[in-house]
Image (cartoon, one colour):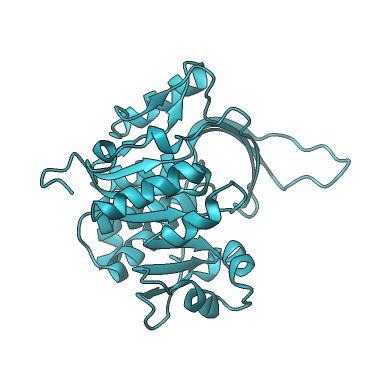
Length: 304
């Protein structure tokens, strides 16, 4: 890895545009419900994680694939406004960000996501270079990057760069192999259960902590998360107790806050603690990004 790095965190993966619809309660079949409010925000696993990392003080960059349509231009404008460097973006005329309609139940803060990803493209292995990867301290990948992400992870390891991964699902070709290359795996409990066959989060963490992985954390919504460093003791961290308005993007914020801490040389336990608080604060405001805190806000709560 070069001595002078350009970014703390470089992310390759999904960017999205989310149209949020707020309802009093999620509709039952064959019923009508009134939309009480609506708004459009940027979203996506990697893009939102990078916004969170930037707000917490990391130098973040996005290296995904976007097009020349309005959704792509909107994505770039919002990322750049948040301080995320978009110079590494690969532009292809046929590409678009993921487009989602998010139905938010105002009575619980839970959300249902209806998405279209038919024009979402990822870098192929021959579009990933050591020159690109070598400019970061930490590489962030999500499941969608497939074989391109797998190659990027291996390049990163050759350069001595660790990889943080958001493996929300394993449906993309190459995702299962990529899972094994992730140094810092933060994974939802449902996916962890399907991968390991275990019923308890502690056992899931133990099953996924092998192979020299730096950290495995299994997140379980309002139950908090369980994590272990390098296959050691499994520890539990409860969620931040807040009035929940909208859980959209909480997982992405957790990932981004964690990556920001690791990229700046903070310990794993501290990164989990910061990520837990950041995700909790985010849940107090609508949308995937509006509630993402800065580092001063997180530190105030940690010290209080």
